[in-house]
Length: 252
Image 1 (cartoon, rainbow, N blue to C red):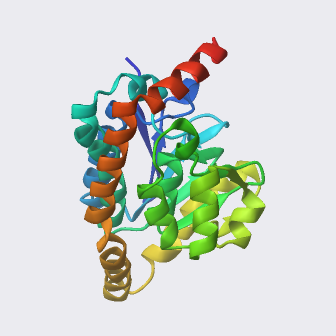
Image 2 (cartoon, one colour):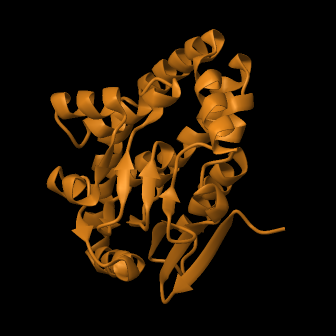
């Protein structure tokens, strides 16, 4: 059986690759758990200086939650299901080593949020990224929280309420992407940034990241609770299920 994550080592950098290319590397519960577990293991590995997150294939970094799984979630299961995905964001922030997102394609929903909580983001001109949950009948709450750490109120509202995807150029203009490079250079550039960060004075690096972590996590529990309640209400009304059914039927 194919592993849902692959770990490649380039010198002292670990590349953690989401390995569901046929599903655009969408976050199944299995993949979400594997990412979180891998982050914990790599953070404790003394042979690893930092981590690059990327997706298998050339179409997607991560297209968000797996729609097949999202369709079958019951209201009473939402807190556990949503919590499994949100634990990835927390583990990225808790990882003391540099974590760089190498955006090799679409980064939507949960994929976009993984990128937002990483220490930097590298993309190419074909990358698209954003928070489309609202168009799937799912309240955009955790995503709007993470965007609020990067963007002003008005732009956050626009992206959360329209669900539109940004081009890589617009994302860079807004400060959501740090580096734009050729598609074939995305991972290598991310590895270069990890190596550069790893060479910083260790205490200064760790305390700087720790302060950003403290700020990022200060409202996490509140956003999580609001996200759970919003999704429970939406699922109880049947809106996400109807949107997902229509999408899957059209795809067939």
